[in-house]
Length: 513
Ligand code: DQQ
Picture 1 (cartoon, protein in one colour):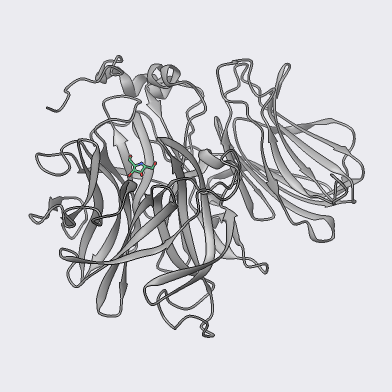
Picture 2 (cartoon, rainbow, N blue to C red):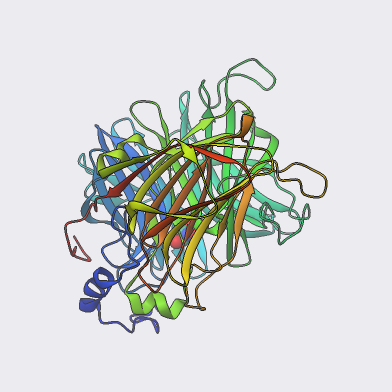
């Protein structure tokens, strides 16, 4: 029987919105749910010019339970209007939750493919939308795939990537094969309702690498996403041909209930399989940019959203009345090394106010910037670093608290030159219950040149160092607003541009728009 009240539903529903709005850690220019719980982006798309963002939503409180699909629309990927809940559990295969999925255009009919949850099991379901995408009707055929592939010992089975290939639909469902590794099962259909199983697209190797490593593949792949980057069409051309572009396979590495981190393979999808070339980390913040989903918008850009998980305790989230932040939409491109490079969509610049420009000058031992301070900031820096130098940018700083972004250029380590971006949260917060783990990853700095973009939205931080993203959260207690620069070795600041960022929501929003 479905539980009516969850043990974590301790905050009365009519108090959730007020609690959420009063929280100083709640971002103001990132998308957040009206209150309650938000996780994965779903059905990200542009339809007749309007952008649609659906999301995993629990309006009962800030915990993951009996998930609905929240819905918001935008003309510009920046300003969002809440829309009625798109999907909610009902008797049948999604009675315990409408889990993650995608939106496709079925000959002009908006159609959702999602994971219906019943008991401990998820199965593929379909819902059809009204022309304005505001009313959704579940398909009578649900679940459209009645069971995972027979005879395979799987770790889990959910989440979808669906695309049109010639005259048919193809679908991937994320999974893992016990004792082997993560996988995605490939299916084909003429009508999105009857699916023929083809086989595993390819299978990862959970035994390769250290389980604690930031690029461990996990035992199950959540939220699989396959797209062609750098030109050409997914599925066009045979293996080894000269069709341009790289097929990128994104997944979120999961293990035994633990949401680890998003990774991607570069490689080539041809016929019924994918030949992986290289595995990469998608975001150096790991679990703070989880379950990403992407789409090609009308202008052909590959736009990606991810879920910024919280770094505070379950009890703190419940008390706050809200949990989970959607990343700013970011554009993914292929860099000359064949890896993904990211930048927030340029539309985000429309929120910039009170411009301050500093530089050129040499960065000294430590300097608090005059005229640049705040909890909602967009900072863009161009730097030239000498080999062996380290640059630090402190944000949300005051007295005993400071969050530090550090970039090292050719800093010898173990005899090898190394360049990196790092987020040091050791002194971010006097609250010792929040996560303070260091996050870092390698960055290329050709000729010592660094373009650093830092978006601060209260507890939500998005950092891009020469296109490599590092997303995370910080929860300072003292309300610090200062920005501080420091350097060890020679670092020249060519230019720093800073803006205060406007919020995108006018005030409290109803839990059920
Ligand atoms: N969250 C969804 C699942 C997905 C997971 C459930 C990833 O469909 O696998 O809310 O965060």
